[in-house]
Structure formats: C-alpha cells, structure tokens
Length: 349
Image: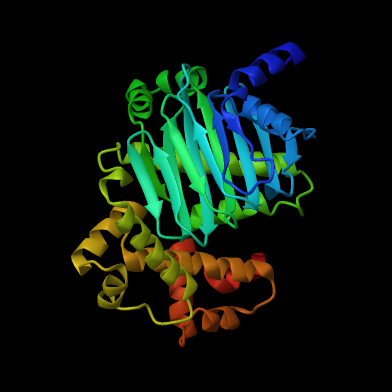
C-alpha cells in the first residue's frame, strides 16, 4: 500500500477511534475497512508502532501480546492475535461495502462477562471463558466487549468474494450461495480443532514456521467448511441458546480433562449442564457430530497416540494413564480407531 493511500485510510477512520490518555476508561476502536492487512497497518499506526514482517507488539498500557496478518494467496488472508488486556476494550467492526467471508476461531478467558455481537445476534457469557468458531461476513456489524485482564487467542480467516467464486462457486454454486446467505453461524472448537490451534500458537520449534502455520490454517478452514456444508446449514449452532452453548462446552471440558477416570454417567453430566438427558445428548451430537461417549473415546485414543508419539511412555503406561485396567481392552480400542495396535504404532513412532 502506498503512503498516500495509507494516510487516506487512516484519516477515514480517525474519527472512530477513542483512546483515553490515561487508559483509565474503556479503549474504543471502530473500524470500517474489510481488509485484514489494512486493519493491521491502521491499528499499529494509531499506536505509533512500527510493523515488522506484518506483525506488531501491543503497547504495554493497552495489552501484552501481538497481532500479525499473513496472506496465503490473493483473496485468502488470516490474522493471529495473542494478548492479555491491560485496559477495558470495546472493538467495533462497521459494515463494509465489499463482501468478505470472515471466520473467527477465538478462545477468550475473562474474570468478567464477555459480550460478542454479530448483527442482531448477541452472545454474552457469565465470565470465565468463550471458545467457539463464528462465521459471518464483512457486511455485518460486529462488536466485542472485554474487560481488563481478559486473555485472547484468536485466528481470523478472511476470504474475499473473488476467491469464493474461483474456489467454490465454479465447482458447487449451491455451497457458494449457502456461504453468502448466512450472516451468522456459531460452532464449537472441537478437541481436534483445539490441537491445531495450539500448534499454530506454539510453532517456535518448527524450522519453517510460515509453512507450518499456513498448512494448519488450511486444515482448519477445510475442516470447518466441510463440516458446515455437510450439515447443509440446516441446523446451525444458532439454533441453541448461548446458555446451552456454554453448557455443552463445559461438558466437553469435563470429558477431555478426565481420561483417566470412568466415563461419567449421562445423568451426572445432564445435572451439570442443567438440562435433561435427552436434550444434552441431542444438542451434543448436533454440536460435535457424534454422541458423548463416542466423542470421549475418540479423543481418548488421540490422547493415547499423542502420548505414544512423545516416546516417553510404554504402551502399558499409556493404557494405565488413560484408565485401562486391561491392556487388551486398550489395544482393541486403539486398533478400532487407528487400524493398528498401539505396540506397532509405538515401534513406528
């Protein structure tokens, strides 16, 4: 971008930015441009911070952390943010003229309420955390309100209309129309997605970090679009309340944190979720594409694979860590998931 164009763009949004000199009140930022790279240049410029390889570190008075934007190919870019707020923050994204599909993979931890508004849809959590995928577009007004101390890790994928036409409309016009017509889709970050996101934010050991991150962004995009298009968007996550959405995330957390214990009874999980057993089973399957025990067992085996790949544990040790008292049962479960016995996988790894 030329210097003159950047200055024009900065002047366009200047009136929408309100920085408190002492950072005592809420920092408000309003942005009306759809392009992620423009966002990065404007946001860093108003903090008077120089970009280095399309990345900048936030000033300490605002937050501890960074933001960066990368282009995979024309029309397909992504933004990574990883920070802890040192002031209250309200971010607004005003509707744009051009259409861009926007997909957020966000994990937010807070001691206070989190408010996220997309068009007419409002998501408000009662503190602690919000972990979800949200698909919307640049023509929809958005607002995110966070309190000081909030910790945010987020990946934003942006696809412009030309990219969608070339990659999706030509092969499947119906899918293209589905993506353009839905202003708001909320979906869960499954354990598989969570693992890929963790890889993205912990890529320091990779010898080719750019290629490493790009490949995982592509995997997330492919998995998410395949999932929602397979569902044909008949039952998007919008069909359940924010409260129920939080409840199933709480249940998923319990299942993923307790591999070494006996699978909890559905009755107990339903009490924790504050819903009937039938409702919990229905909503959980809608959200994760499989039942409670199937989801627990699949991720349990992937945890076993991860432990074996580390090379730090024997097959029997891994089986014991995951709650198996009979090694034969562990081997059978592993073979069912990966079509090979854990001893063979251990030897190959």
